[in-house]
Length: 109
Image (cartoon, rainbow, N blue to C red):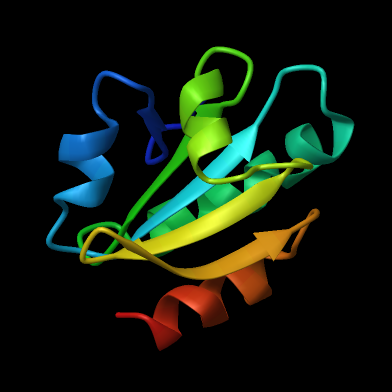
């Protein structure tokens, strides 16, 4: 369900794409059955387009990657975690607007 600019994160690529990234990475923890997650998809894609080349933005399906969801204590979705230098810097729980995502990313560039 990733868009043109939105990456798809999973257990196979998480360490390389997220933890070892030299750019900030916004990870959207979501699931197919989650209506607020689907409502947020356009905002996540818009942020991915806006910050292309400056930050990585992607989605991680919690149903398919339960160990990662557990590692980061994802209790409700959507949850967005912003990683920088392999560490969680920020956390947003619940559907958020494109503007909030943009402010979060700008602050962490």
